[in-house]
Amino acid sequence: MTELDTDRFLTVQEVADVLRVSRWSVGRYIGAGALEAIKGDGPNGSIRIPLRSLHAYIEAHTVAGSERGRGDPRRAGGAGPVRGPGAHRARPPS
Image (cartoon, rainbow, N blue to C red; front, side, top):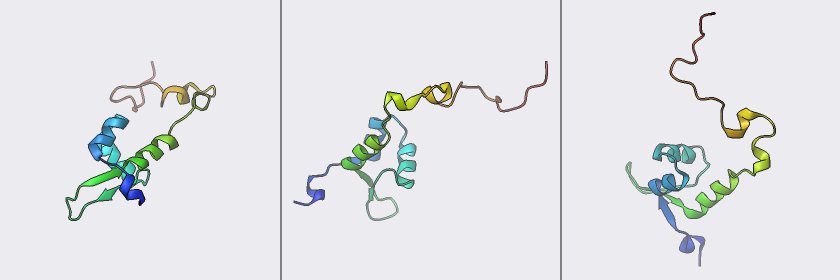
């Protein structure tokens, strides 16, 4: 039996649901080579992601608790505080 005989294929939406991201994000992961995909014939061919590729992606992007923070609060939970629109502009001195 070949690998294709035993592999299950997922739609972009199914992968997006598992990862809790948008379909557009899954497309970016495919474009960046982080996820393997198979595209059907034609310009609008359907895209399928092998389940083993999703498992490999999750494995490669899973971090242990000790790898997250290392004392830097910006690395522990994300990119830092969330700011509203216009936060990138310099504020006038008080």
